[in-house]
Image 1 (cartoon, rainbow, N blue to C red):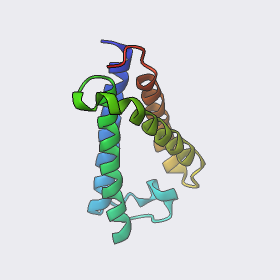
Image 2 (image 1 turned 180 degrees about the horizontal axis):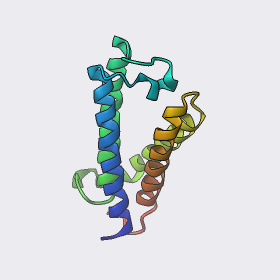
Image 3 (image 1 turned 180 degrees about the vertical axis):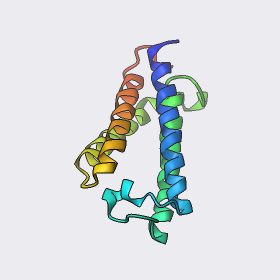
Length: 132
């Protein structure tokens, strides 16, 4: 398997973990200390539960872009994924910065490494030479 495909699979698997975390927050899991800078320890208030669902949707869309760019799925997105992958890279970079500077030590410890993995994987997929 080529490196960009491995990176895409890793990105997708990590995305599923983050999506499940967001869905759990939306469902009322008391993990607010590990999100949003720890500003809402315990359960998220209703408006942030909606935001967690929206973020889960965004993360799923980003994962599909990575998989499409790697040539794994959504062949009709092949052309569009050539520029959309850079949106994923930018999103991943911003996520890494935000998860590194968060005041929540727990969030930093868990999500900064996750964001770094997602950034590295998205860059590997973005710079692939044998683009579809």
